[in-house]
Structure formats: C-alpha cells, structure tokens
Image (cartoon, rainbow, N blue to C red; front, side, top):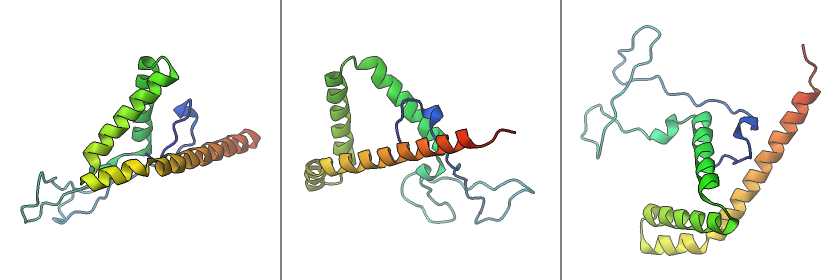
Length: 144
C-alpha cells in the first residue's frame, strides 16, 4: 500500500480523488450521466464486454478508511509488540503465498522482503514529513 499509516488518518493531507472514466464503447450516455460498461467475469467472451481493474476505482479516502479499520483490528487484538509482529508476519506470509505465481517467486520475494520493508519505511517517513510541512504552511496562512 503506498499510503502512510499515521496515528490519526484524519490529520493526513488530503489527496485528489480518483475519477472514473465516462467513456463508453456504445456511446449511449444520457445527457449529463456517464454511461456504464458491464463488467465481465472470467475470461473475455469477445463482443463489447471488457474487463476493468477494480483497483482503479478506489479513492484515496476509501483506502485510508480501510487502513484505519486494519489499524483498529491490530490495536484491539494485539496487546504487545511481540503479538503484533507475530500477527503481521503471519498475514504477510499468507499474502505472499497467495500472490506469487510460482514456488521460485515465493522464495525470491521472501528472501528480498527486507528491501520491501526498507522502501516502505522511506516512503512513509517522506509522506509523514510532507504532511507536517503542509500542516505548518496551513498554520501560517492568514485566516479570513
């Protein structure tokens, strides 16, 4: 996840909302209303039905809300750092096991996991620092 997990997600700087495409292959949109293309399940059967990646339709706010729920689940279930670490490691390994296409990729990703953690920490520290700069700028801004 490329978003930071701050103590209070409400204090995080807001990001632009992702917008859905309003184009259609049929061109039969009502005035002012975007047309909706049907979603296909499974392999494409030809014709005009196209598959879309649902990830593209999530907003930053939706992702932040899910992160907040995840954080609440960890906070309420893990009473110590050791509990938290054990739980996170088990969940991450399960996700790695599910998402890798081959045994070789599974072991390669596991062996290189330290890189992923380092990169994520850099990203989170940068975004948190950016959020603090924006808060400082807003505090200095004259109020109307």
